[in-house]
Length: 187
Image 1 (spheres, one colour):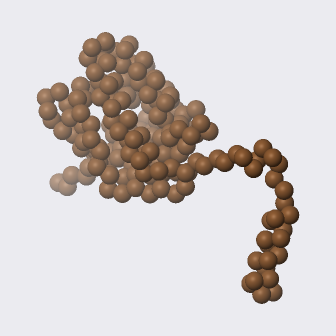
Image 2 (cartoon, rainbow, N blue to C red; image 1 turned 180 degrees about the vertical axis):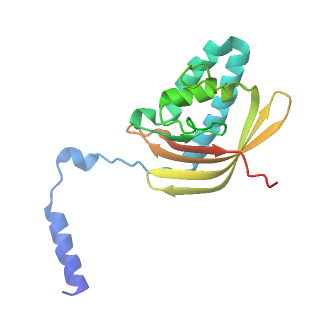
């Protein structure tokens, strides 16, 4: 069959399918933009500094309460497992695929994660992101690069960071992959 004939038949068939009235006016677009990704990354940085500040000014309870809000708004744990590999974890608790595991990493205080001292409680005062690359494919976006975090003495720690974001049903970006590690240092 010739290409033009196939196209004509396809057009006729598609035109013959009537959509319900409600479907004609409803458009769902879960496409992610670069500005949304950059905004989500900046929000993550701000949250890290805010949790540190909450700890300094209000103690462990204030930091934990804020960290819970951050996890619930920035990560996709309500959608299922999040593939989270924090910077400073070790076996058998290297990966934090549950909200409780992530919360323990950020603020400590969970007997089930006895080695966690609270990464977000280290007195961070500044956080900057330098993406090496970003890959956006419709409703998901991945980034890879460095995050530079500054402590209260002015010391900057650089971590290698990979994130993947998807949109939830409300159209909000959620982190579903978060891999962080210290840069390789040759001997």
